Length: 435
Image 1 (cartoon, rainbow, N blue to C red):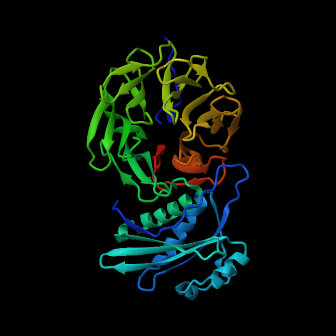
Image 2 (image 1 turned 135 degrees about the horizontal axis):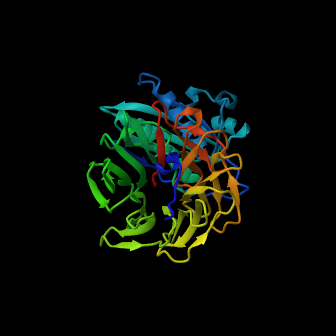
């Protein structure tokens, strides 16, 4: 009996802020077009005269990083060249901001942070198209603990203003972290800050995936060496429920885009096959029937198709099929090992782990028609478990580079690699949340 055998490293794979908005017409740009030019923007000062510990500087730095990561903006590094002083922001007349325009900057952002009883008030202002008269203001009010979240929200507002798309600064990343011999689920901000432990079972939890409403994770759990199942956990309450507890292994679960079902792999039939669980009726539907091993289902954004991994061609390769299991066809042909597919939110790319000619495990992208393929990571580490950002411009993945397994973010073109986790020895299986 044939079984799909994967390397172990690949198989095991806040308070609320309120916002007060001013009325303003939104401007829409197509940020995905090939000739799109990043918008030059200056992040000026965030005044904090009544605040200790240079709070305004921290807000400005977080905002700059958010805007750079968005890939929409080119953030001006040297504000001094714009000829604007901090005192000018108390009366930001057009003549002052025109100095920025003369230096090639077409938008400017500034603001202030102040204390209001137990809360903080973050006022953000943007002068977009500096040679016009308009200044748009946003106000965010929340506890000091959510100041970073308020800053992320300001960044997302700016992305939406210029693209009509939701920003990603307030998204989350779920991942697995090894803690005192066990592997537990964690959730962190998209930029690696504020990691929070979600499970504390003292054994093994693996392969988290988000529900479409972002309220829950579905994952594989080993409560003991003899019991293994697929469960969900509500992030707000910690409430858990068992979805699948069939004989054998039950692994690689994934919610459908509408949240109505979960696809997964199980070995109850002797080898690994793909099934779909209807979350309302609890009915199981078998999707694959083959003597080879099938696993790692990944939904298309429409929910009409699934990518998955099978060794039915002799080695692990990525296949596609309709959501009912029909129309199975092979997608990858280059290389003898391709696994862990992840379908982009816009449906135009599938990311996966590819083994190169020099036997390195890297990330590749391929179009669903198989006509275009590109390798986007390099180096000597093992890259695994790609997951897309909701805007389709970034990927998060794990890598054993630097002799430890960490979580990294990279642009979808392979640029701007950034490590998100620190400390420990093993951080893996990242999953990027929906917006």
